[in-house]
Length: 122
Image 1: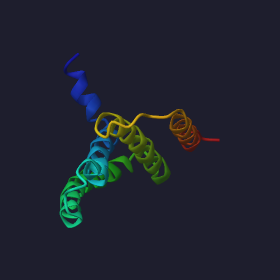
Image 2: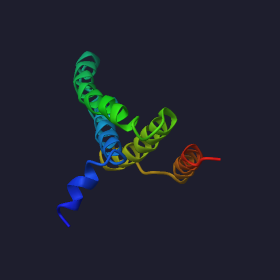
Image 3: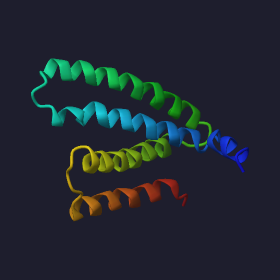
């Protein structure tokens, strides 16, 4: 079984998803980490966020490049948005200690429904 796992992770279908997941962790941190540190000067927050965004781009660009071999641009963008909401919800709950409300859950569910239609060929 262990020999199958690396091949699965290197799949052209899975690699972009993993890279987008990692990229979104950095993106979400770059945009929202500072909300717990309001005493940090804005200029410092911007510089730190730029540094985090560099790593986000180092993963997002290859994710889209590799992903374009098996997904179209609309599918890649949809995956990115769905992953963004999943990462943001976890970050908001775990790091910012903000609860996920029912209305947010419904909104995320509607976005997931939209993603279904992007991937469903008619």
